[in-house]
Image (cartoon, rainbow, N blue to C red; front, side):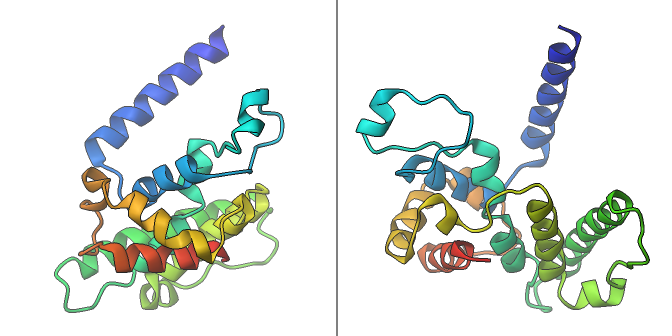
Length: 193
């Protein structure tokens, strides 16, 4: 009971954080990934016979968000230097990449590895964050790329169209505009990382 109470408090706190800080493209893209999946199913999740008969799989919400994140962070972290949000966006991407890199080294026991320099991260902040997130996903055995969920190039445009109505989150992206062309490109990159 105590563990459930703590999990409930953690989930509520996270929800308040998301509600106040906002989420953007990873979240908006997740709805299409989760709703259009055909066959993927997470091990140990119960299946009903009707699920298999209807040809519908299940992608948990957290997975549908994180699987697009490397593609999104490459997009949002590499703003044109003339964009007024460039420094702010780069700083946030570098800060997150640094936190993930330090945590990675700590988990691995600081075996003489070093994190990329701040200068290297600043040169490509989106790539720095995407790469650190991919390291964590590999470590946690999370599927890399939406192709692992059963998607292919033939699905990319429908995934992009399924994301377009999510204005409340797509408009929070630091890089604008986010239209069908950008979303299609993001999903293409998210196929295989």
